Image (cartoon, rainbow, N blue to C red):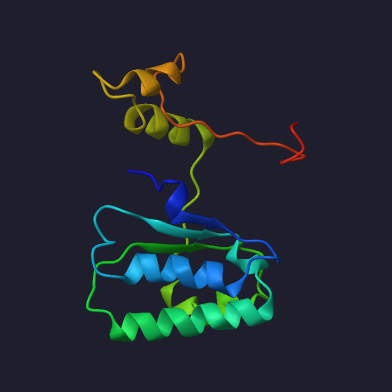
Length: 145
């Protein structure tokens, strides 16, 4: 399953250390690895102090945790070479292959289907293509546009 709202932290320069630490604790604490995928989006936008503390908390919790199969993803801009996060987590770096638009659409249509017999709430959001995931892009996010 894709991450839910409580598993994703969208980073900005205003993101605080406590928010980052809380997400890392959730990802690496016992009982949290049951099919959850924890994500930091735009981690390259974190200020230096928070980035440094991210590395500290992650290293400390990985060493003290008994969980070996945690799911914690850090997404950064590939062009953010001067980011502390991209440098600190370089050993964990994974580069994604390039896929064309048709390959992505085919994958999404085949894997993001609304299950038959779902609750009425899920059915209320069904799209013509029976997909239960929707991405909304906006030039002025948060402004109602």
